[in-house]
Image (cartoon, rainbow, N blue to C red; front, side, top):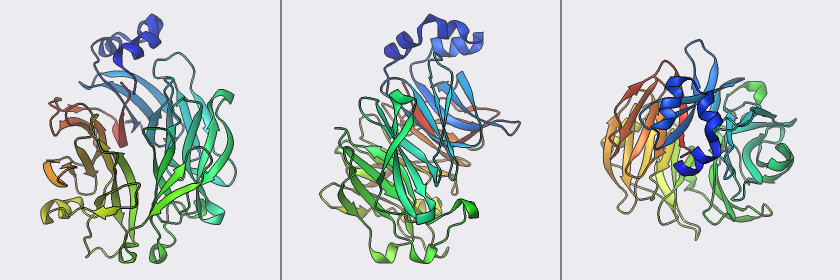
Length: 362
């Protein structure tokens, strides 16, 4: 994440001068900058930059629906296509370079998530080797125009979100365990034999450091989204693909020494999640975790030390979460932006629909 000073310095006067007056004003008063994929009122897709007050700073068009956005230490951002999309779009949030479209290679598609190496030289992206029902991490050389230079195995099926450890040595991958193939769209092909897992993989050579699974009885609990807390634990959110009458726990955490567990949410917030967690986020300090459910129209904040809920918020189609110093900013598929669990941002409404993820850039 960039500091405001670094972002503005790198953007330079040319970026601000090139903005329309209202957008230039939004940049001038911004303490924080957020990014999200959106669907516009005319049905087209794009990505937007907003300040913490909901002021629109900039936008970029996308060829199709985007999913998550990741930021490079050097300042570039990448929007990944929603599964089974075949593009990643590189853009400069400061406006100093034209967008670059990076296509997936033959036999692969993107899963909507990725991360940069600490030096910004490599981009890691979760992908589907769909003819072999195998998850991979695509490796892209940033300096060579995002040329794909290889891949790592995720040691699982259907990888979704990917995180890089604070020391830059380990990739943590949520293998959702669900087989899909673009010939069948988003149809899930192996619900009876799902195999979700959490893989810890060397960012240097792709070696498997460790892999964790929940109990066999929970094999239809797809691990999807991740966030680190202050103690370095990996918090995860799940989506249940089993019988709708069942309501297993959906949120848990794991450690690199082999501990993985689901926390016991009380009956009412668990019911409200409706077997679906769409996003997981942590505050900047990692002292609060939040999960969202667009299916249940609900946001939930959790104290990671006690594993107990501390706040809830009803938000229709709410999914995007971005951690700030105190609490979170949340977005919805209805076009709403609102503060949650300690952030007093005034509610804002837009004429576009936010996609599932909201990321803080500054």
